[in-house]
Length: 442
Image (cartoon, rainbow, N blue to C red; front, side, top):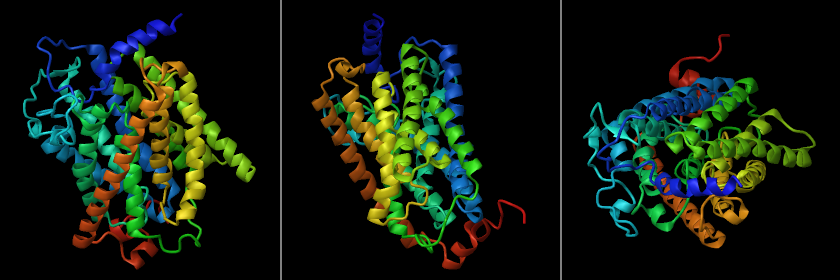
């Protein structure tokens, strides 16, 4: 009896949520909502914590000790540069809807305009969806920071610091900002016109970063000694701590995307948690079948796989759908990490493509299945075949666009700066060679 009222509430809320990242037209009579504002400031802090220290610890703990600090410096360097670029033009490229027309395709279906360059029009009392616009801007910035940082795990232990930062800055400009606009730009944006569903970033964040990671590790080539030399994680407790911080921060990522507190917040929070739990079970089951035991790193990876998979779906699917998506994503990512990578022969240092790319693809497509009311979903009028086709189109476009543009950016950076460190620098480790620092005293 409670399901029908909830679906009605969600049916009214979903049209707003499809444009929640692009509220360009300010309501004439907005009032400050202190509850919404407080939650969104908290959600922003949680997403920032996902990157630093969460992602950096997760990645750093899985690297060899001689490269522990390098991933921290790459994440911090990229965060600083992207924060500056966000103010100069990034925010405008993502949210400016000038020239967009619902149902029509034009240049602005792919990238926003420049009406908000240098945050033009921002005032101390500017409000968006009941919160200060400054909070909204910072929340979006936290997404812009963590997405390119995810890519760093693919080229870990062999890319120059300067090349990594320049690549991530260019990638943010030509890949992330346009993709975020295409997904969340509202009526007239590419994915919106197609009817694709991506609540919190299955395509714009996870497939996007995962595909860029694949391009980067293919272009850079394998690490010295890979796969014959053992390259085991140097500190699994640090990696597990980072994974736990990512899990906690994910509630800011997904539930924060509701942009307020409502019945939808409960739906999104529950789906996020169930996706993580089911991801653990999916990875654990197949790992035990394959190897006879469950590993600590495997369980952490399963949780993150489930979180990746549920990200695009978290506001659209019921508990059963969340469990199914988490379970299947956990299994699929295990196979990608343990079989697909070996079969294709690429060296993705920390399995960014295997977790984020493959997990994002599975989650995005399954969103189209389990959003249907007949399967417990909350998108009224959704038909599985039609919605899955829209999801497949969004996945295919993201894959092709991201891989092609990422490849070009990498080529340009390689020609100008050079991507890879010298062989002797790789041998002694990037911490000492690139930064003259050590993670641990000896």
